[in-house]
Picture 1 (cartoon, rainbow, N blue to C red):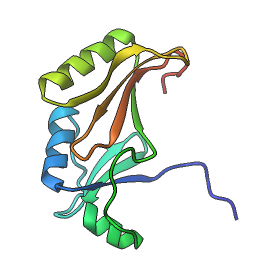
Picture 2 (picture 1 turned 90 degrees about the vertical axis):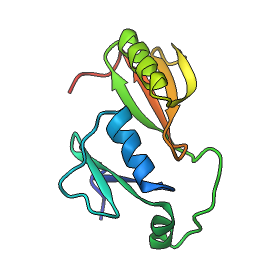
Picture 3 (picture 1 turned 135 degrees about the vertical axis):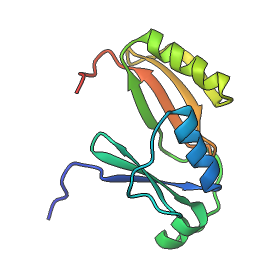
Length: 135
């Protein structure tokens, strides 16, 4: 059996669910899905779902320890359509108090990129990729 090439859910373990909800609603301007519940929030994104779930409960479900610090071994990305859009997004996020990890800059692969952190330290690349086709 092979798995189809797709991701259905990305679930982030939130140390404080309400703080994370506020971040994604206020800083990103996203709206919760009607499928959300009191203990799990979903944001529907172009065919996949970003889920926020209490960190301890998510670790328990996966049968792993909820402890862990530093780089989590992955990043999430939000691509925009110009360097100017990246700069504007980062300035807007900065004004809302979002942690800017890497200032916008030209990068080795030919694009323009910056990194921010959500309240749990999950890294989001805010980037312009000139090779990405609009979908």
